Structure formats: C-alpha cells, structure tokens
Length: 380
Picture 1 (cartoon, rainbow, N blue to C red):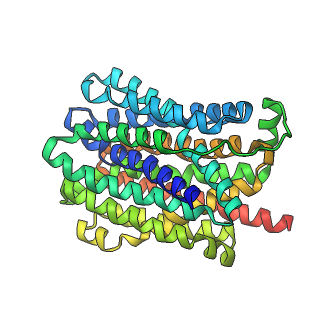
Picture 2: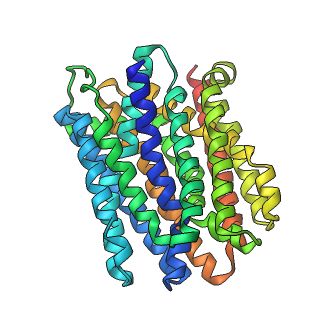
C-alpha cells in the first residue's frame, strides 16, 4: 500500500508542476510582450532540449543503475532553474534558461513512467492505476494556479512549478528497481532499438499524434481567450479536461484487453483529430467545457496504451532508453514541430489556424498507426 501511495504522489506532483507552468505559459509570454513567433520559438526550445536530454538521461540510468537518484536530482535542478524565469524580460536569455530547465525536466516523465510500469507489474496492477494521478495533479494545478494568478499575476506559475518538483523529490522514497544483468554497449543497444519496425513506427506515429497534445497545453489558453473565455475559465477547462483523463487511464487496462493496444491507440487518435478540427472552428467556451470528456477518451487512453506498447516491444535491458526515445519522439520532436509551426501560424493567421494544423498532423499519425496494425497482423 505504501508503494502505491508513493507512486500516486510522485505522478501527481510531477504533473502538477507541468500543469502549473505549461497551461498559462503562452499567456504569460504574451503579457510580457513576446510575439507569436517568439512564443513558438521559446516553447519549441524546451522541446528541442528534450530531444537530447531524454535519451541522455535514459542512457545515464541504464549505465549507472541509479534511476531514483537521477530522478530526484533532475527534479530539484529543473525547479531551481525555473525560479529565475519571472525575473527575465529579454527574449534570448529567457529562451536559454527555459531550454536549461528542460534539460533536467527531460529526465522526469520517462523515468517515472519506467519506474511506474515496473512497480505496477510487480504489484499486479496496470500502469494506468499510477498514471491517472498525473492527470489529477495536472488538473488541480491548472485550476488552482489560474485562479491565484488572476489575483497575484501570471508570474506565480514558476514558484508553483518549483515547489511541486521539490516536494516530489523529497517525499519519493523507493529503492532502485531490480534490473537484469544483461548489458549491451550503448551504440549497438540503440541500433537494436531503432531496427525494430514496430518501434520505428510508434516513434513516427507519436511524433504526429502527441506533438499537438503537447502544443495544446501551451496554446489552449490563447484559444480560450480568443473565443471569449477568461483566465479563471482556462483553469476550469483544464480541471475538467485533465480530470477526465484519470478515469479512462483507470479503465485503460480493460479497454486494451478488449480492443488490443494498437486498436486502442487508433481509437484515441481518431477522437483527437475530430477534437482539433472542431476547435479550429472557434466553438464557444461553454461547448468546449461541456464536451470535456473527449480529452480523457483521446489523450488519457493514448498515454497509457502508447507507453505500454513501447514497454512490451522494447529490449528488456534497454527499457528506460526505449521509453526516453519514445518520449523524445512525441514530447520532444513532435512538440517542437507543432509549437514552432503553431507560433508561425499564430502570427500569419490566428489561433484557429493553429488548431486546424493540429488536426492535419493527427490524421498523419493515424495513418501511420494503420500501417503499424497492418505490419503487426502480417507478422502474426
């Protein structure tokens, strides 16, 4: 029971920090005078850093076998660096510091996912039993911080980010997981991952599917204001959206058992595509709030099924590296692609064009999943 509580708190705290920062960051940058292109470049600089930092931290964990220690150090370092951001008004310095935060943040999600999957298997649970608390933490953060920011200002997102990471680093007390003694040198090990057709395809699909999800966390506040919403309303929206992920993460094990991993990912992706195209029409805020459950059906299911697919198809001795490369494809490369392109579209057109682009990207990812299913059936 103590282990279960530890992981629930870990995921809740990590994603509380992410929710506090990302959901209101674009609004904060707009308030201090940055253009749409500059906003896109800043956000994509973080995603660009994730491309390099996530595989780096995965390799460090695989070689040192000090996964928990690496997680704690990276949590504290990212939080401390974030405290400097509200004092910066220059574009270039903000971009550099924001990227530095993401160098350390890159370790957190993939390592916690790997630890969570390992612990869930050991306890006879599903990954969704742990990961759902990340969605709950994210939802609580956005609702709480958005309401507080209306009183004290948007700068408050950075101290909340720091505090959540600090608390997670202090209170998470688990032993290092048991790892097989089997070892493969770094470069040959990476080659063994990349040559796997299923692994390559899930990386490509995640690039196009999860990139818009990452960018939405940044751009949704602008969409909500564009259609007539308030900052407090943004908090309510994310509370409903992220809160809807938790029950679907909880039910993901049953849905995967019934539909299969690939079919579950395809269903979640198709719902995401419909969602982005609908947002591109500029619906009133009340309708986006009413249909909040589509976030859980799409993002919640894809997070769990995607991570489980990677875990089941990765080499046993390179699971952490496989998970971090997977995170880099979606959160890193997919994120930078959608954040940067979204910033340009924001300057050239408006926020509605950004969401139409998200829909097109998701359709491409869906087609890749179709080919992945065909490939899997052909292999038997």
